[in-house]
Length: 185
Image 1 (cartoon, rainbow, N blue to C red):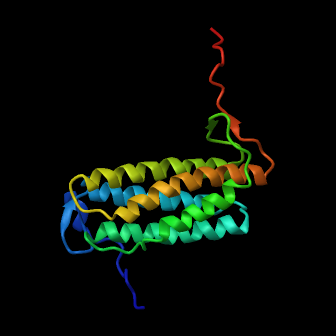
Image 2 (image 1 turned 90 degrees about the vertical axis):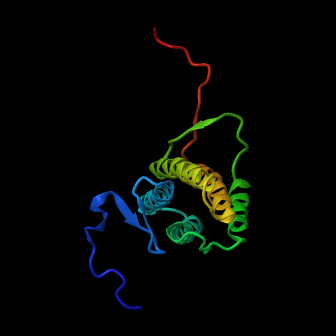
Image 3 (image 1 turned 45 degrees about the horizontal axis):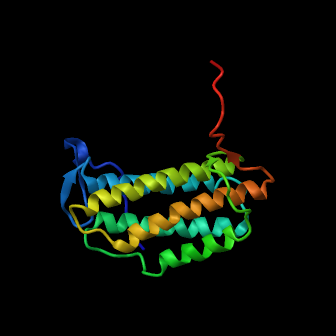
């Protein structure tokens, strides 16, 4: 493959627009660009999580997720283009079921935290939820892949379970929400 990006800045966005992969230009705050940005941010947070020491199976899964998120970004950059295969959400479900089977059942809500890796994973989960909302907003006015929306929905569930698994691997308890705490006032 040849050089795809030989010049990083183009100055074409100085007017508040950005170019899509199909050549059209839209405002930088267009719902499509907002969705692309949220998916990119999620991929970046996963990159941060991947700097931690992780079990091999989780690391491999997250690397694959990063590639799929890049595919979703491609779909968003080129309206009508589909890159995410219909079986991708099922792949996440399989990993989710495998990891969840090794965890104690939840009886309480948990707070984001525990080990640093789990905290990063919770951050990724919350960014994933935002990306899912941005795709849903875009889908109200334009065509968006149903598979990609389903993928992000499953991914946020998987990231929750991965966070719990990472705490378990580090022998760190999940942080339970204390719903009946008393104020010191």
